[in-house]
Length: 228
Image (cartoon, rainbow, N blue to C red; front, top):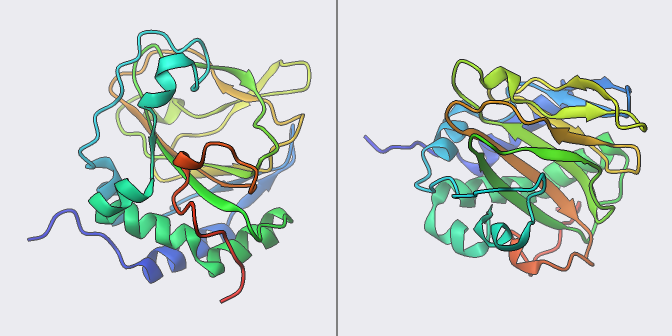
């Protein structure tokens, strides 16, 4: 038996499309969309069993791009796509015009000519993120939670108001996701708390053509288009 089973790109697109249509919207303290059952469970399992070890980070400083830690991050690059069918299928699905149109319509953004960026994050005990808002070069931010374990549901993203007061936390239920359009009021982070095991998640963005870190892009020579 072949393992893991990687769904066809068309099946991933169809499954994700249904999840996005069924997403609930919360406008407090800023607009964000909450999704459940975002991707086929076979694909979620295939991501979890990728032979990619969590990075060894002594101190993150509350950010992901701190000095030498930045080079330890894992992106679905052309090289990774060529190595693992899981990465190839997932990235191909997020690159399709059908998905691009759904993001454009749901988030009311212009995605034409942007680029796909997918980061596989594996946080271990001691990881945290200080309150921040994403740079405007990210046209949207999607966080897909692939956390497992008895405390995993508590490993969601912390949300803050404009005074950086903690106002809530998204659920990290397995295969759930949150989407928001970055803005100056979209404060979020991850309060330091025990992580028993590994906090696994995917951050998926479309980024503007001015994105400087081209080595982070899934298809650096293929801009997003909504046209079939």
